[in-house]
Length: 259
Image (tube, rainbow, N blue to C red; front, side, top):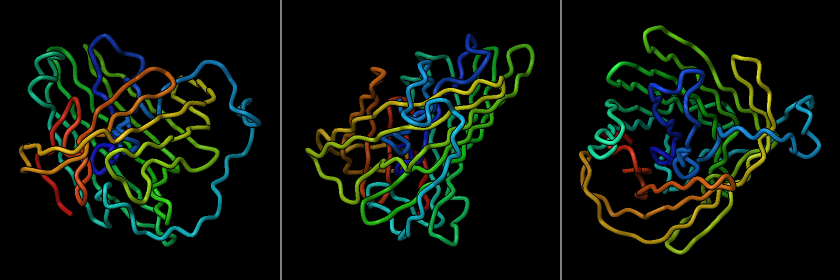
């Protein structure tokens, strides 16, 4: 989703990237992973909050707790992904990530945690990404995102990326069919361990292009193909199965799913 029914995916760290990990990728908004939330934007043009000094508030919404079938999200769902052969060969990286629903709030919001573990020829990258989602009659919404990571390339470097949105971001509509298209509008503030504080102002457009059968280590699925394009020019492809969520992305395949 996203990565996992659209939970979030974080692209692994390459040895040449030491200061901070590559952008968060919400595969199709979910995880759509992902170029979704987390791409820096230098110009400070986020409307009234552009200065980064406004108080961030989440509207009082009565979340239903029932998420779109395309997300696969439930109160105890877990997805395990492994980088696919093509990605490992091209990047010289191995590993993967596990996404799970960590807790459910009294208001029906879901806290989803993704743990990433990547190894290269001379580096390692581990991270924990925490996203908060809410579901209502319109679909799945992203409320906030936070990432802590550690990179080791001869020495260890730790950091974080914190994203707060001025309003919830619609990631997945309540129902999704082939031919559907929707926009996810990100408007908020990004902060990191170096003290950077930047406005986020971009849109991710998702198009459901087709449906086909796909086989991954977790099994055979009939999946919709979600193509995303953001206003920064980044494209992603995710295979999404109703009731399960993301079963494959450009980098990883689902190897285990616990509903």
